[in-house]
Image (tube, rainbow, N blue to C red):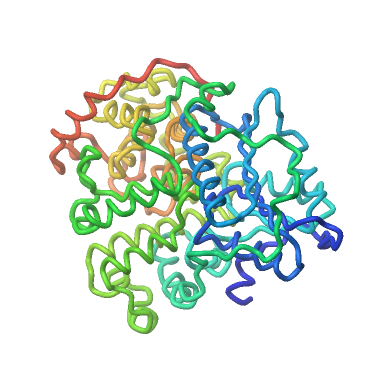
Length: 498
């Protein structure tokens, strides 16, 4: 399988229609008009077939955990895409479902007019099911394109059981894949689609906040003020990180701190919604550090965690997170997405065994979902992490691990803890509903980890973390003072969902 072939995944056996009016790119996960392999392939197909290209981006009302927070972030991205499409000359059809204009059947009608459909090959949440449903119902070819990482996921082998086993595979594939990265400035196809009538009313994207406020979605999860979605905001965040965060990343990335102190990249929501691509981020890190040496990478550094690209310690640390650890979740989901339904199907045998052994252990504290959501536990640090999540749509990386571990300790059963964590993360986190959301949560239960001694109550041999040790390890004063300024989450009693 060649590198370019590895990016393509044929979802049905239907033919390409010579009578189709246009090539349809159904933008689901890679919601941007540059650095996008799906868009590149759609342009290639349009030029080869002599057809216009139509880019369709939709937003339904009925996705799980639909809220004002998620909706507005996506709408802000759609606004950016509409402006970019007008400037670049692409034909872009944005659709936002309302009560008056339902989405049901729309995509099938668009596909019936197309020569073929190109979409994004994203291995998580509702996207694989949506793509498979269209492919099953349509008499047009439907092809999904992998733009998830630098190296195509299908060239990285089976589901990994540790980052150390995936890292050398990424190193081996990286140089060639990066050489064939997506176009930073895609060229519009030669054939004009501007006169093709869409068959629905375009969304009014001038005011995403006003539009989101009118829709029948969960308005208890408020948008994060100052956290704007879209490619423009993504590029501003990347620029700020390269200037302030990258130079201290290796030493301080784990330090809990207010957002004014840029320790992490802050890019995960933009990556999740496709408002920026990982290839562009990697390229920007190379440009900022001058650290890319492909021959040295391939021959000398394959499999080594240190010296990922050149000698810059901060760039190496960030790129190992952005490539190795991110790809662990994506490759695992490519092969085992269905296994996220429960711990019984997701976890390694040793983790299940130790959790079963301690399933009846006495819990020091037990909380229900309403108490978790409202940050009403006995632990001030856990409460701070939950307040950060509810108010800002994220938790600092190190505290996210502690947050997950404590839910396991203070829940009636491991499965209840898992359902609680999936619900809280997917409801509130801007980067939730992502491969790394699920694998990050499952790591708290032992996925990608090893047994630890000694045996502890409830956790058994699962890695233990404590708030007391975290307080000793980090200076938390500035972080806790900042969290105290955030609005307290309202008490709710929502149904858990996985």
